[in-house]
Image (cartoon, rainbow, N blue to C red; front, side):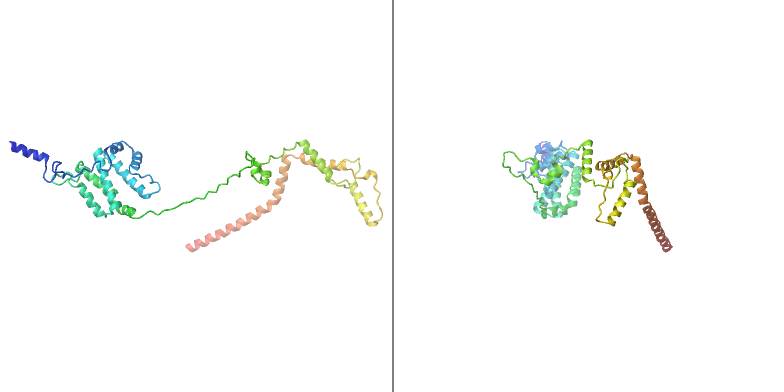
Length: 350
């Protein structure tokens, strides 16, 4: 009876080909919590993908991933592995052991530059003994056979399928690109007085006069009419004389004044020495001429928008009538040319 109990104990405590912890420390060290500690693994389990990325970036010091392709690839590789393990509902021990596998395979490429065949052998050694009692355990005995198949498929589709890219990344240095920008900043000159000069002294005089200076106020209509009258009186020249009693006319001079002008021209041709005596009544009156000019300006002021529109339309029709006909003829010529080309194309096609 005692011998049977001893045989039972030997089957439970020690299996053939699988050393136990009592065999002089020959048991291989477990891969769980080897890279990620138990505390770090427990923190990662409830996180989403963005939080996992931030946490792994802090653990592995990958702060320069924004500009370093190698660090960005490593961070993406680690984040994908952890997030996939959480989706598979791994325990903390399984998640840490799985991450140790992924980390070790990547380090074999980075540090040892192993080929894909050599790294595959290393991965097979890690999975050895899962679900088989007669084979020495590869320190991943906390995985079942089904879980080991899923892990193996993930490793081959993520790492070994792109093995040459990972090997190239760790064996070639990234080309550095230096981007520089020259920025010229104009600093205001120091003022001699405690306070800076006003804004109008910081620009040229032309710019100040054209764009910054306050324009003069617009004159009132009465003041404007007075200035117009004074300007006309200064510029006005004496014209043909008119009788004081005659009413001012809007255009030209009176027939009487024309006649007198022709007579004066004829007398000047006849004898240059003679001086024509102009009666006092026929002398030009500046005030009357100014009134004529003001009356002409009043006539333009009395025009309505309809009158102006009629004048503009008539002038436009006269100027653009021939232009429309010329354009129509050109369009007809162009249309005929295009039709001839189309007919030629049809003939060639037939």
